[in-house]
Length: 134
Image (cartoon, rainbow, N blue to C red; front, side, top):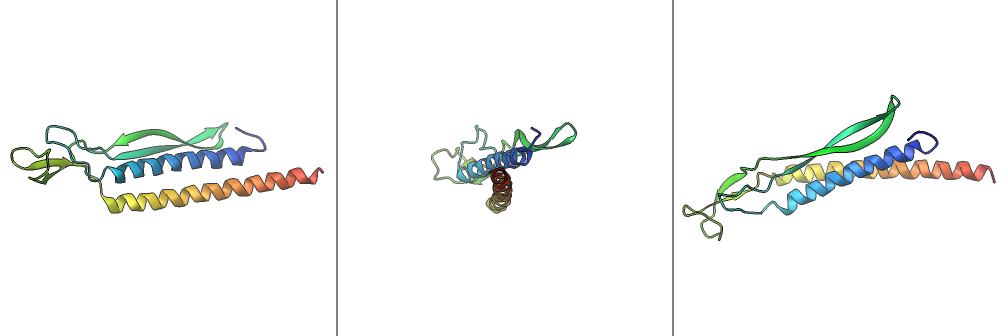
């Protein structure tokens, strides 16, 4: 999108990317303690892949290019009292690091806030420009 509202479009696309990233992080944290039997795949950590968008050789924002998944093997934990434990007492857990997820959440949250601020400033500038003609 080019024209007078191009900066709104760019900021909006950034908010969309970071919202998807926050959704992936929240899924990862929510499934941190999801145990599975040894014959099943563990919960796979989600990673959002962002891609820059160009329009006519100019920056055009960002988009979600896809989602990649972590290890299906997860980690093996000795938890003999768990109902899904095998005869040796092991279960499969996701290979998700909570501190890494919290760091990712903070980064995505700050980036989302920066895009919101950019959107609001551009909107205010356009509104003031419209008031000039009154």
